[in-house]
Image (cartoon, rainbow, N blue to C red):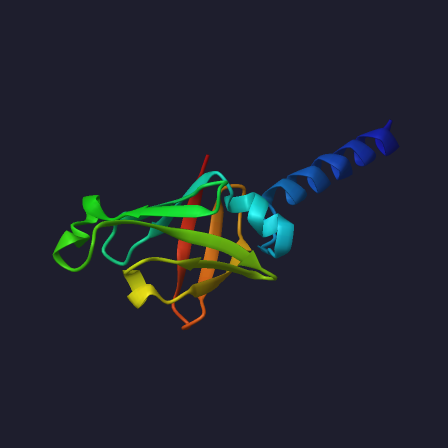
Length: 131
């Protein structure tokens, strides 16, 4: 009886410790990276408290809309460019944003619907994924 109680208590403790463990961050590349973003909206957290939505279409087009953030004062608020995966990088190119130059990001999945990104110029941030 005592042995059974100890075994049960140990199992409950092990399960609770496992459930409380933080999600392991996962660096994505190739097909895993493509699967993560293809057909999804990614909401980039902005320094001024809002979110900047990007829609990564399965066709390879990416659409961004900063209208809600008031970005029309500084740049074209909406634009559609192209995206692709190159090894461990998610790359995109816009007609006018970033002067039309391609930029690439490494993506680290931090949860079921969250990620960290680092752009090739060193800027970084967080985002959430929506279907």
